[in-house]
Amino acid sequence: MTPLGRRIAALIGAQGPISIAQFMALALHDPLNGYYATRDPLGAEGDFITAPEISQMFGELIGLWLAQTWHDQGKPARPRLVELGPGRGTLLRDALRAMTLMPEFRDQLEVVLVEMSPALRRVQETVLKDCGVPLRWVESFGSLAADRPLYLVANEFFDALPIRQYVRAERGWCERMVTADADGTLGFALSPVAATGIPADRDGAPMGGVYEASTAGAALAETIAHVIAARGGAALIVDYGYEAAGFGETLQAVASHNFAGVLDRPGESDLSAHVDFSLLADAAARGGANAWGAVEQGDFLRELGIEQRALRLAHGDDGMRAVLNAQVERLTYADQGRMGALFKALAIVPRGAPTPPGF
Image (cartoon, rainbow, N blue to C red; front, side):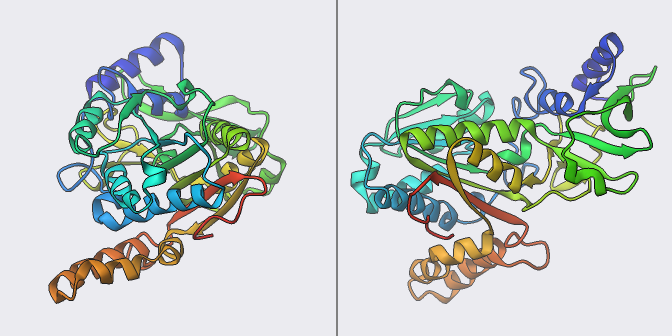
């Protein structure tokens, strides 16, 4: 058992079972032993790889997407660019470089990185030190004032927000909790009391069916939408997930590019769950904005011109063309575990704004 696992077991011993949401928050963000607080998890030497690390084209196209939405909305003054969970800063570096094509947008940006991890912030400071624009860091989106047009990107951020799991049993929907035995070994158990507030459309689930919900994700999407509705701007959320929730368990742990047991090594493996994009779209509507999508990442990137960008970058070099084509295929194809269909994009814009690019 990891040091954090022993602390979680002690917490459960003192106060009783905890929700999966609380377990995820501790496992990922505990300031002493949490997964993101203590390491750089990205890349070949880490535990997983994200789209910006696969190809510079991903960040470049997102940068141009943000600039184009600003242009299409009448070029509002004093735009704020925010990235949630910037990883190594690779996406933002590539996006800002692409934005040099629209300097009137780039030159007036206030750029904010929302990052809780001291370890990742140090990496971001190094990667972005020569980006040419002022940067500042905050630990939460809620700490930002809603005083500027908001242009926001969140790539593989919502999948790591805490979720709750509910299992349909004879006594109704019961929340799945994390428990610990006398030896401190963590395990799952159902709450003895049936949960309330489960959406009515969940009643068709079979016995043993699992319903996952991220109240944290929905609340954040609604807050983002409220700022965009009031001040203008656009948000782009890219993540793996589904367009409408079904009945299934998607919570997973990953370590060294392989799946691991969710409860096996708290603080030493990444935890995530598929994003319910319908939940985010509904939250955006409650916040007073319009949601577009979700569309498959492959379709989205092709609409933005990733194939044409690859041709330009190759400069007629056959070897480089082969490398870039492999990157395009990994980002846009849907077969053999590639990202094109599993990952999806959702946009949030003010009501009445033009259709955002790619949608």
